[in-house]
Image 1 (tube, rainbow, N blue to C red):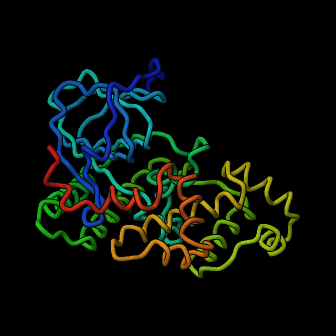
Image 2: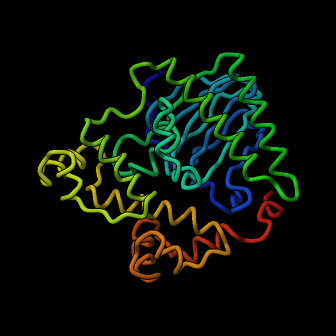
Amino acid sequence: MNPTPPKLIAHHTITQARVGLSTTRPVRAQRWDMGSFILPHDHTYYEICVVNSGHGLHQTDYFQTPAGPGTVVVIPPGKVHAFAEGHRLIGTNIYYLTEWLLTELTQLWQQDSLVSLFLADSLFPRSNHARPYQFDLETRESESVMIDLEDMQREWDVTTPSVLFMQSSFLKVLIRLSRSYARQSPRERGFQFRRPVWEALERIEESLLGSESFSVAALARQLGVSPDHFTRLFKEATSWSPLEYFQMRRVHHACKLLLDPEAKISDIAYRLGYADAAHLSRVFKRFRGTSPREYRRVYTKPDPHTAIS
């Protein structure tokens, strides 16, 4: 890749008002005629851009490199990027709610590079794991990905889309992309955590799925290390203390449950082991910057896609 360009300043931010994600449409694939350039901008969501045709120069604060048919660009929330020196650039952008996927994290870890490429910002936002990526698909890979993206676009436009259909198509895309990246970058096969950290991550997921209580001391004892040593190892690897990470992951599960408009917030709180709805609200606001009620309101508005320009 070419040398890093000067730091980019976002001219605008792609937000929910533009993207229109919701409980019935938690992922969006949208074809764009980018023309000759796209001004520097960032997003409040992950964006994956697959270049359909044309050529240009893709720029981030990390690198600038040519992009053409089959190029894949992955931009985490808050990272600025732009396209310059373009010639008839056309691409398909994908926006998605990471929390919609994170309740199945144990399975996703098993796919090389998938979590590090497409979910790292939601898990380790304080670390350098969440950064832009760019790589190129082979022709056959690109053709397969574009078929799935076209299916997702068509499903978005139906009156009552199938969330299962959209989820299946999107997961196929993520797996195809992560396999391609892992093949091209065999030394970057995802996160390189030490054994106690990996075991801790797995046991935290088990605790969440089983609605079990969490104790740093008990987990350290199971791993055969002292609580202080365990906490130090975990924080060095993830930038979270074990308890902070557990609380954040519990909020991710709350996000998924809140997408069901019929579920009572108090019931969600009890199900996840909070003392009450007020306890859930305090922790939720700490990690998400908003209340559970407001989060639900944003994503359960009726038929949001009809307002998108």
